[in-house]
Length: 130
Figure 1 (tube, one colour):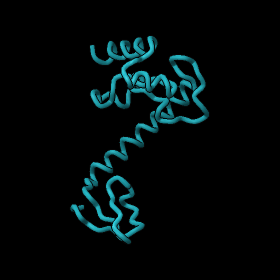
Figure 2 (cartoon, rainbow, N blue to C red; figure 1 turned 90 degrees about the vertical axis):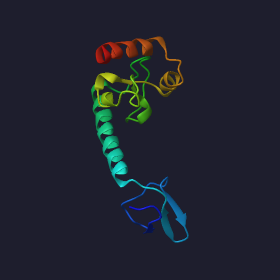
Figure 3 (cartoon, rainbow, N blue to C red; figure 1 turned 180 degrees about the vertical axis):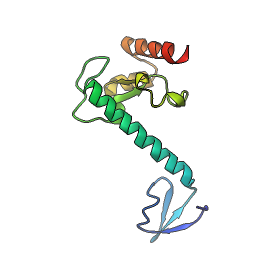
Figure 4 (cartoon, rainbow, N blue to C red; figure 1 turned 60 degrees about the vertical axis):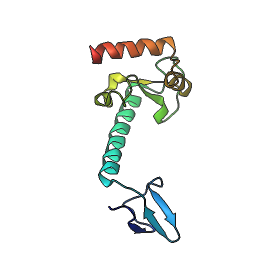
């Protein structure tokens, strides 16, 4: 789809509010790479299937503190030990994902992981990078 293409309201092919700009009764596409959006959607769906599988196998508890996480899986519960931006090939590796509380995830993301988190990261490095 070309830049500046107009779409009628209700078009179900593109729903991303970040790529659409409202102009009156029409929606104007700023810059959309449809292949990118479809690839991203497929990755997200595959990742959610993996998250649900991990949640079912490991139960709703943090692997660091043992705290209860809730009845259903949420994205913050799943921490990629080796970041998927730096190691995209490890995105779907179960052993690269740790179930954690929101606070534990934030501590790791902000560069202050708890000792058990550091230990899990080191084990992942040994398994996947050596």
